[in-house]
Image (cartoon, rainbow, N blue to C red):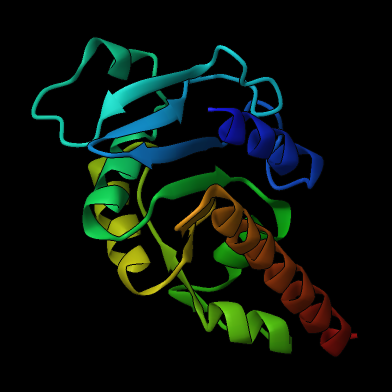
Length: 183
């Protein structure tokens, strides 16, 4: 739990989400720790609940868990992820609106770590988003939801944070480079 609190603060400090946007989770066996809906990522103390990953019917804690709880569940079921971070970084959102299905990074580090970044669709917390994000994250460590934000998975919370940060870096470099090319 302390790890999610620490990285919630890091996400906000790094500008990867505004305080009230985004969510964090960590898999623990057949359950996940997840931030509550509407909680501030930089003030998560007392704002993390435990819910089952395999949920046949909504649990009472699902009501207060993040509105993206079903997206996290789908990702955990479809991948080897042990941590998922969801942010709303500026350049990633802009690039997702400029590119239909994927973003190909321009800088060498981003190409090395991310290869290409899939862009998926789906409304906030929708089954479509859960299905599309989980599918994209089978073969990639990060994805961007068109006009919405990023999801990153990792074997650790730290790894997911590196991916979340790398996506924003790749999108910033691409946006700035594309802008410079047009000048």
